[in-house]
Length: 289
Image (cartoon, rainbow, N blue to C red; front, side):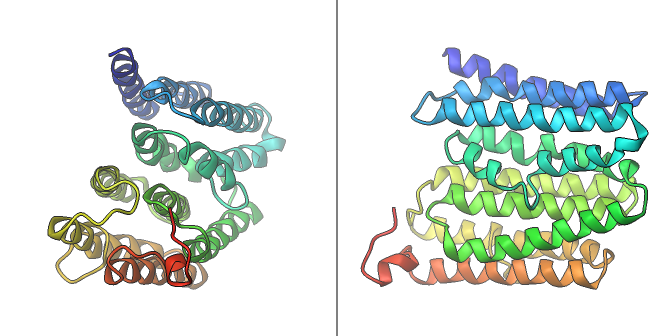
C-alpha cells in the first residue's frame, strides 16, 4: 500500500512539473522544473523493492546530478553553452551516454520505465533553443546517427527480455525526438510527442503484461502485430510513417541510419514471432532467460 501511494505521488509530480516546463518564464525556472520532474520519479522506484532496485536508483540519481550540473553551467555562462547540450545528451541517454539507461531500466519496475519513456522526455521540445546552429548541431546529429546504428546492432547482441527490447526502442526514440527538435517547429514537435506518448504507453502496457518473452496465445500475437510490427493496418506502421516523414526532414544521413535501425528492429520482432518465442540463443543449444 505504501509503495502504491508513493508511486501515485511520483506520477503526479512528474506530470505536474513536466507541464510546468511550458509555463516557465526564464531559463532558471525551466531548469528548476526539469530537475523537479526528474526527482519526482524517485518514489516510483519503491513500488516493488526487488534485488537491484537501490543500485538502479543510485545510478539514476548520479546521472541526474551530473546532467543537471552540466545544464545549469551552460545556462549560467554563455561560453559553456556546449555543456548544456552535453547535459541533455546524457539526460536523454544518447550515444555515447546510453549505458546508464540499461543500468536503470533493467533493475527497476515498469512504472519507472513509463516515466522515463514519456513525460521526462518533454524537455526535448526546448532542445533547439540551446543550439547555436554551428558545429554543436553536427555533434548532436552525429550522436543521433551513432545511436541508431549502435541500437540496431544491440538488438541482435543483447535482447534477452522485453525490458532489453524496450531499452533499445526508448533510446532510439529519444534520438529521433532530439534530432527532429533540431529541424522541426515546436508546434509540429508537440503533436509528434503526443503520438509518441500514446504509442509508448500502449507498448509498455503490452510488454509489462507479457514480461519475460512468454508467448501468450492468439491475443499475444495479435497485440504484438498491431502495436509493435510494422504491418499494413497496424498502429505500428502508422507511428513509423509519421516519425519517418519527420526524420526525413533531418537529412539523408540521419534518415538512413534511422531506416537501418528500424529494419533491424522489425526483423528481430518478426524472427521472434515466427519462432514462436524460441530465442536465437536456443537455436544453438542454450536457452535464453
